[in-house]
Figure (cartoon, rainbow, N blue to C red):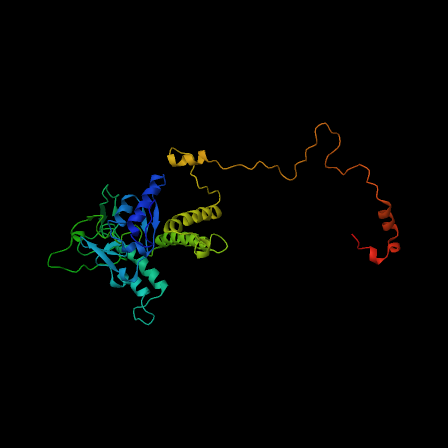
Length: 339
């Protein structure tokens, strides 16, 4: 384990964590991160995590919205490849949502959701799975019957209600996406912002907010003053960056997991992994205390219950104690409190 400055070099440190997780036998899946990782270079964060099989799900800053990249005539809008003839109001949908209150282009959330759904007609569908190096084939949406393009041959079974695209002519001729039925996009093309789900779609919102709420919930649980209170400096009065960065957070995270996750154990299950041997070397002690309702034992060779009230005769009281109990008034008030 290595230590680093807070917020410094997040990409390589995050990749090291993901590799350690996979080394322990956990499969790759959906991955969410905050805007700090958007500033990382592609070869430091995005490309390595895609090579490991993770599916990133991100939000974007205001200066990252709209068209983000282009390849062979296709444009990337907020992480997804689209036809370059997509309507302008669909390209700027998220920008219009975040616009100033008095901006003429300002839209409400319902309009934004409708525009995000309308983008699906212009999205380039994938053709097969990416190869070992991450190259992915994409088809023109006209070939899949999602839009109608005058540049290409009209499909016989096309729906007249489909959107009609109007490619702009260029001196160099139509781009490759318009002259071919499919294109190959390299993993480096738009790698800084690519994600497998369309930004703002129902599927994207389900994954993103589930991951985000899980992270924020655990952080709020650990910062709660009634629990670990990791945000309070008075709870970690130890010297040194190693103790402040390693010992206290690791112990706090372990106790947080033990509190919040039922059945959680700091040791993994018994597997072929050598790290799991700690669970066998240090087993959890089992409580052997008898319940309170268990009958109490009897003394060996004794017929009487040792816990029963005693049957021995009471000790004879002295004559003075008897007289005091029978006639307290004879002794006077001044003698009652003598030792």
